[in-house]
Length: 388
Image (cartoon, rainbow, N blue to C red; front, side, top):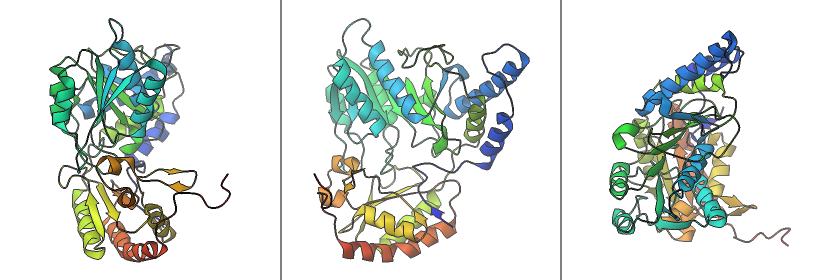
């Protein structure tokens, strides 16, 4: 049986959400139809929307359902960017270093195809945005389309000072989008209190099903749609709505944030005791309750992952691997780590189903995995077989 400690990638669906999902799947009808079958589906859809809205401190009309976090982020960033060009050019997008690739790739697309200019703000050694650099950039904000940032870093778990960023941007008339996909279901998020303009979340990171997410758009927030053909979701997102997925999303959302910080702290203490070469990365206190991210000296992160997986423990590295060639985490590099250290990443993420026995099994397996990975050494950056 696998010890699953990769909840940041996806968390198992919660029993309450699964029950809501399977029950709702038996309900036929398109939520846009006016007959009784359609209206039963509409009731499921809107009940799910209301529950998601409550979990985020907003009104149901401000919740736009999407296919997941990636679509929500693309709709927010591209939609805000396009809308901000309506009266005059505003080509600049302000973004911290070390963001998720859904953001990085979206703004790179805007740079390539729409002439966007990317202003990257540095992050410090814990992964937090440099607020002085942000303030300096926003001092001249006439050409800034938007600011976008993570609520919490998906790799190292560091929580960003979102309220301060919003205040600085709004003082200059600049809207803010927040990617809260990694944070949703782990920490309380009050969108209204933070005065955010747009927030992206995903059901499967909070115990709901894969394939549905949401973009919170405040009443005053204007975006251009990505998808056209019906405008079923507030005229900014088209397509037949998935009432069953919305019902399951709502069921998971109504369960609230699941705090596993006690288990996380036990895991961190155990790793630092058993593996002297391990270094905890991310902010020591302002971090997600389920995130424990380490680098291990002289170990390839991928080697650790495969060795742990071979004994039934599922974790992550948080790094990319292109064409079989190990690469360092762009987040750790942005935090100032040397390339070799950044390749030794190990991300362990806990969730609602994590038990003390899971933590103990991981801690028992880790020292041998580290010893074997260290003996294997670091992989070459260049492929040695079949290279052309």
